[in-house]
Image (cartoon, rainbow, N blue to C red; front, side, top):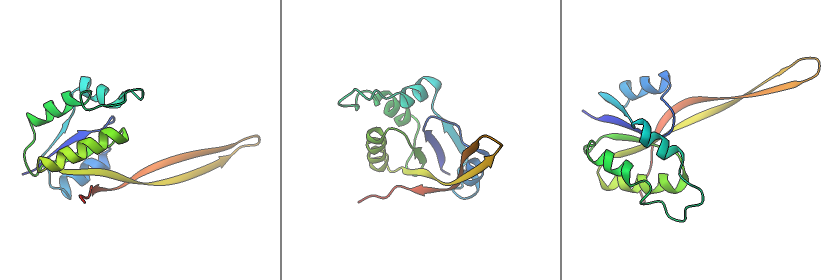
Length: 129
């Protein structure tokens, strides 16, 4: 049975958890420890290379994942690219969440208030070349 590992900076919504258990048929969801979650969410934009910066995340995952596990990967574009390649090399199933954006507009006498709501649609598998 597959597990789901989360490599992004927020928690799953209830709808995402439901999809993970029911459609992906995962048996357990694993969040990054707080120190690695913080590291993933604060990849320095000044850095010209980041492979060593994200090494602790790979090390943590390598001790836990098994072939066929799912991993949600979303974040810094370069780090996401590296981790998706790494996930495929380990026989994992890298996925990302797709959303539908809804714009809700309300008015009072003086203002127009625009609120953007992002609603989870599904998890999608990254595709290999």
